[in-house]
Image (cartoon, rainbow, N blue to C red; front, side):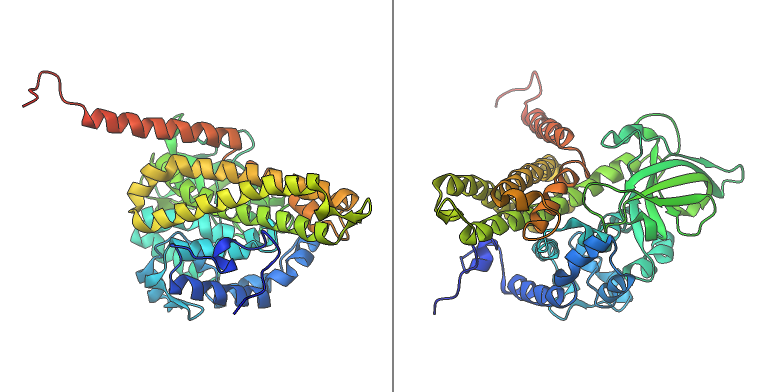
Length: 443
């Protein structure tokens, strides 16, 4: 039986009925259940929330009660921790012990079907990027103190790395954490900027300087935020992402128990770099769906818009523009699928080494693809494409969010450079390992 095809580029190929080696029955079941949940509770309302620059607090609570914040964590999930809190499956579709990175990718893709980053980021960023360092490097005491409230949605979290004078240059962060004479507290002073979810976060996984300059002086610390003495939070207006809660944090003599240290002092840079891989891959997945929304919206518009006596889609120059963007989009998505499949087959420590540079490259390329697709959509929508209301509202909003794809999580040029440096480092390391020691016999 023939099924009705969606508008070109509206869905990834596996949802158009085309065969794929990556998706098991579990993945396909999860996609259907996830989309049904989001179609009922989330996606239809995202444009209104973005206009209002706020996602109602009850939405976060509803997601938490359905365990629909957990899927943004890196796979495999922390099974023992989740089960101890009564979380055994996600929407009854996938047991937590069966969850893999392809399930995660489906969730990230589905959360972005509106084409707007703000509403999704408002719910997931703190959990997705603030919790993993505690899970991986925090001691049991810290995990027991912080994680139950966060994983059950009773409190919220954020990741606080970037500062006004140090964005992608993480090694030169200046926020300090000095121990008191009795050794029981850190006194934290400094500022953090462009912190997603900071406005409503009870805690931040924060990069602080506990000793001298450079990367060796950095540590990660769980810093209390909401209502904590010495902490000031104020909203930041950025291009797009209006509902995501972007925040400027000021810290003045903030007392934090030394028990809130994540792992060891001086290991912060290593922990941050490890955490970036999940963040950058998550961004790449979401941004690729954003590009898809922009491009299929353009196709949809060209199918009905008439100019010069014919539909836009009948103009060769229009089809040429759509074709170039379509090739970029589907190539990027195929690369993303390859990535997440590899994540299901590699150990975390191996993936960090083998895919770290490529993850940076995929994140950068996702922003480039979005830029092309969003610009294409605006041009084909014409005047409607740069009007904040009406037919072109969604593509105008997506185009405004392009910098939010190319800068946060590692600026594009930094990511491109990092990718090559990491790939060359791996090559040279492998070459040295294969070299025969001088003076040894061939026999």
